[in-house]
Amino acid sequence: MYLTLADANSARSASGSVIGKRLGNPKGRQPRGRRSTAAACQTWHDVPVIYRDQVPLLEFDSQTSAVVEPTSTQQEIVAPRAAVACFFPEIVSEWSDDAKPILDLPARERLWEIERGGARLALFYPGMGAPLAASRLERVIAAGCRSIVACGAAGALVPGLEMGHEIISVSAALRDEGTSYHYVPPSRIIRARPDIVAALAAMAERRGEPHRIGMTWTTDGYFRETQDRVARRRAEGCITVEMEAAALLAVAAFRDVQFGQYLYAGDDLAGEIWDHRNWWDSPRRHDLAELAVDASLALAQNTLYQGLSEQESCRTT
Image 1 (tube, rainbow, N blue to C red):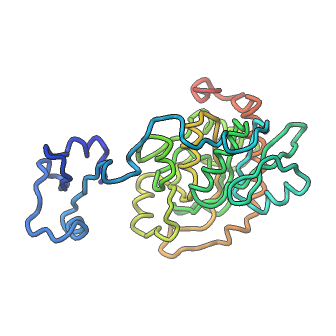
Image 2: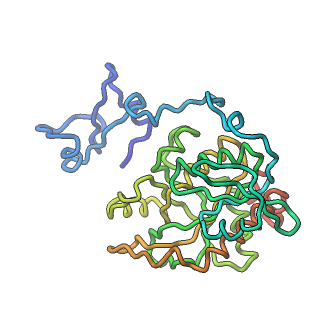
Image 3: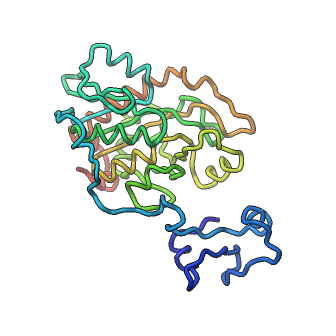
């Protein structure tokens, strides 16, 4: 069980101290002989109540302008409206062979301009981890990209999610990283725009691709994906785990741009033993990248929503 911020605020004592709240004990009484927070949590199932003055990530700042803005620290260009955030570096390298570099991105990466079907398209590698991916996305948005579709791989958390078989349209991300908290208020989950999720799924269906819509777990702790935590995330409804989706959704929401993400299941964390399944060598990577190209161009041209019901296309820009 986890306490929400509202639970935490209501549990604050008159003196403003932090108290422990035992599950099933609304009066917040403490067990006798408490040894330590960790030991007590294991023995009594206590949930520590945490306030924003103890955890900096909970200090959400709603100011829209910062001391350093991406627009003030890069050259002014007019990038294509459509962009693909491709997490497959070998594909970015292949497609950029005869492409035009239009912007330097953090950590010696570039934003490329390519042409597809007579249309301009931006292409970039977001990098590994939420901070770097968010920083590069900020630069890309500042350059003029407004309809971005990401494509990448993720670990499978549920049994039966075969490597590369189904394409996943990300509907939400569980925020177990830090970057997203600098862009949107604290919450356990950040949700993608339903209209974009539905449109990406419809695009996959029109292409005859097996697909599903699902929530992913975004974590900073690549080597802290324990069995207990995997089971907990699976129980919460997550079907995959990766390291960037929550942050990218948050940046897109803050900057008010269109963003969607495709994933394919790579390595397998659903069993007792991790199975890498040679996830980096899946032929589906090209299929996913091509699908992201089509989806981003359709978003930019406002045609991705064609064929959706009025309920599915609940919000367009």
